Image (tube, rainbow, N blue to C red; front, side):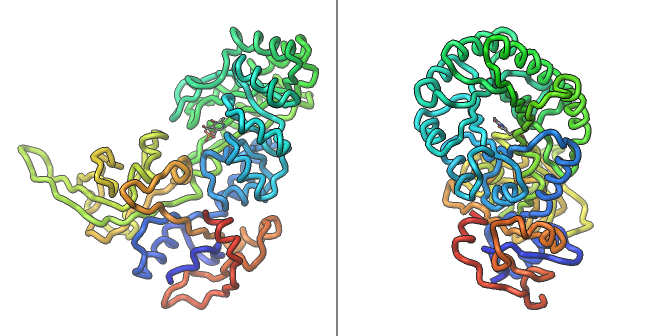
Length: 440
Ligand SMILES: Cc1ncc(COP(=O)(O)O)c(C=O)c1O
């Protein structure tokens, strides 16, 4: 065995997700694609969020990546959760998160899911239509409602306003009045500017709209307007930062909600998930296209993860992924394309890119692959989904291990991944329950 797959490996000394992937591959038995998940990245991002936006409580959007280790880590750090369905509520409550730390942030909910939320005490939920209000009136009249308004960023990787959010000027006032007539309790306003939003000023506009609706809601009888939910849309890649957007948000909150005791939450997904996961995939075949006319030679590389697996993010999340060879090389990059393993011609990850010449058996790595990848992937054509190999730096581990609902036995402590030359790792038997809990 190359590594204790079911446990989190505690590493010390110099290491990176790439060096971890190299050690796993060096064992010579790894064939399927795998993720290296760096728990420390999640912790660093949580700390940065708290530092830059102390007033805004993050409620992690589980849909982004429901890997139980990620969810457990965020729960241990103290985030709340944005759940879209009964299954997500079940997942989050199963690890001990109290229902008060959950918002059911899907404005179009299945009746059975509302009943489930009512049963487990998840009272806070969003709406953006008259029919949803009627449904909630019937199924959960005591719900704490949050109106979702539409306010779109000028551009976003995945615009959401096309589907959800009522117009803050022409629709929201009528819905707030209707909710009051129905005797429903509206406690706040939410919005989502679009996932992967590339405009920061949109948060100012959305917070302005929200302020106006707080005032209007109070005037029509909603006397407990106490929650502002600024949604998601925050960047998640290693080369991105929330510094600029947090300045816009903090200043808008100060202007429009300064001095008030309104609770402010957000629903970041990508921000917490993307950078923590590095994907490694094996090039198992290649085919050189015949050189025609003036065209340069072009190599097609086939690897064991594609658009039906992790790279569904290329189709659904409009992600631009970047391939790099796992093993460093100084060979000159050449034109090529990178394909997934299925028999479908659509299964193309990179139609035109440049890579140094690769032999079959070479590995490619892709950074920032934690957002909107794993939960959507399917084993189409019989190709297994990548497993997650979790690692944490010893210093990070020391600072958070007391927070986790895990004991030392869930970890393998050693400076390297296991291997012929590695010093023996101090491993303790991991309870089976954790295997399911942490890495599935
Ligand atoms: C309601 C809601 N909240 C939060 C998110 C997470 O957004 P992001 O990953 O952009 O932070 C989404 C994403 O689709 C969403 O629909």
